Image (spheres, rainbow, N blue to C red):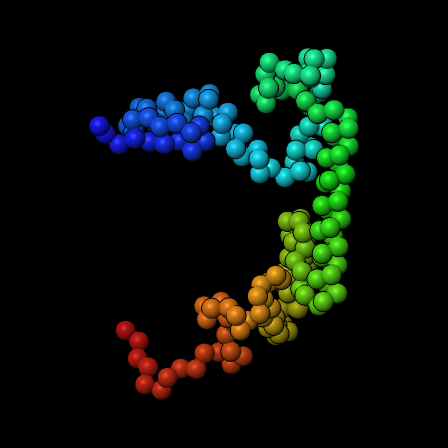
Length: 175
């Protein structure tokens, strides 16, 4: 008997060869099981946005069940479910904002939240650097990312270099 392939998504095993694996990985049952697995870890805001963009499923609202189940292209959430999800998203965003305020009050350098904010800040910094190109730039002091453990607990590879750089041994010869 040859090797067997076990699919964690489908909880099945089969003889492992190229044909069988391709057939399984492209099969409807596997794709549904894989989607269901990743849906367990989706962000509440993404779920809310997706469900709000869908129309309600008439069959589900009338009978409480739908033949298509999780593959239905219509929403199976009631107004109360959407309100609960919306409240959960708001609570999570407020908690995140509160945490950012706390970090800023502690003096931590907290990066901006979106890529657009970062790009805007970068563009300002680059334009300021071009206009002040004659002036020497002062180096930015090194700061550890927020949430990291204290520097003495970090491994040597993650610790900041000394202020003057690493000392060179007097008899060092490269290559």
